[in-house]
Image (tube, rainbow, N blue to C red):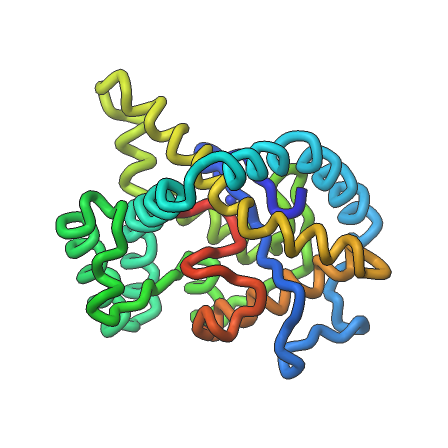
Length: 261
């Protein structure tokens, strides 16, 4: 279960997460050299990786396959768009913290347009204006501030990460207003709705990984190393704010990481 996390991206304790930044191919310029694996805990990480993969094989993957195969694509797309829209406050905060006010304005415009004309975010109406989603998290913000990634880590259930992104994941939960509304609202339905959102996000993030991960496992000599290298390459691309077209293996609007949508 590469990148499978149950709240906790608990560590995202009440925000289920799945940190899997994965792709089958990567830009040569960003290739991670085997000597630069930055994986001092490899024996432990490999054991956890094996556990995660087994859990994923019998839980999340079958659910994701059923969701993909039996839920109509328009419905899945609408759910995905709504989940992405709900994450806008986190995107906005992190673009502001990075001092990128032009992108902050785009995030705000997209949220307003999609929440109104897009019927609560079910339709990505803002895309018609040419405003592309600006996807940011606090791990990326820390990287922009000059914080190093630290050693590669494989968390049980949560998937691949590093100290910087682990701290960033917790910060993203704390900065999500919907999390606090769900935890502290006196409305009886708030809690179930919050967990429904996290569950849908988890499945939504897993669907675009079904085929790439199966292919990667089938063709790689060492599945663990292949995932580790692709995770790190992908994260470099995210930090550099490369466009979706530059991110191999990524479908429109999808992000292979902790569910944050």
